[in-house]
Amino acid sequence: MEYDVIIIGSGPAGISASLYTARANLKTLIISKGIGILEKVNKIDNYYGLEKTLTGEELQEIGIKQAKKLGVEFIKDEVVKIDYESTFRVETINNSYKAKAVIISTGTSRKAPKINGIKEYEGKGVSYCATCDAFFFKGKDVAVLGAQEYALHEAEELVRVANSVTILTNGEEVVQNRSIDFCVEEKKIRELRGSSCIEEIHFEDNTIKKIDGVFVAIGTASSSDLARKIGARIDEKGNIIVNENMSTNVPNLYACGDCTGGILQIAKAVYEGMIAGMNVIKSVKK
Image (cartoon, rainbow, N blue to C red; front, side, top):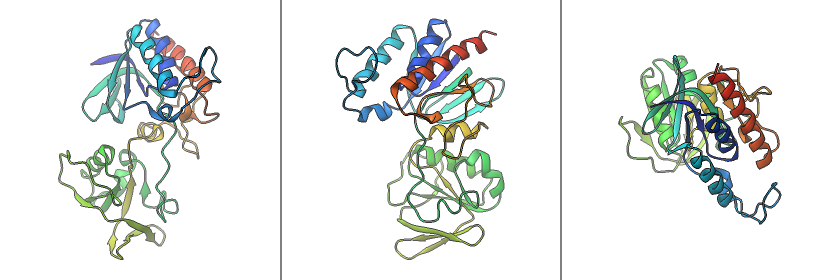
């Protein structure tokens, strides 16, 4: 299925963008795994136009109803990758979709797990993008840190080039619907060690595994994960870098909301969503 624009994330930024693109008669799809951070907000009473205090979930539901009324399509799924050929291809766990433009509005980036050595070996064997860095580990032994669908997707990317791929769950139970029977290690990790580059994984039971690289893929793909895979620039805090039009350095790829950094407020997200939506309209209709 092909769309004019695909929006990843159904928070205030994504919904705001969709209201503009839908009203401009652009075929708009929103892909989202769930509500996100708004689900944890119990009271909102500092946003313009609210006659009474709402929960984050209530405000979210109002926005979704408003978008659906304008013809925006919604799919509940997890996005694992964005590719660009002649058009964008957005891959989810269950399907893939094409679009002329993509807006990333998936909230803040995921933080690295609290394992000794993760930060120290970033760029020295620790990576957050299999698509970007798999080539550097051709014929080597690597591991993917994570236990969910996103980790399995990264492992499937790596198995094409690596000598071996191990899933490190760090004590969690790995999801079962994997197409490739990877080696799975569920032991808790104490630390990563090496000299100039990562060389060993030390577990809590005092066992050691020799390794050439570790790819971090915990939970779902964050905004920066998705952007990085297609070549968008990320700042040192993990925020997607955009210009005044909410456009990234990748043509027709936009980002808005918490994933661009700054003040983490609904008003800011809605504003950036509006800017992104209006500029997608200009771009697609050229």
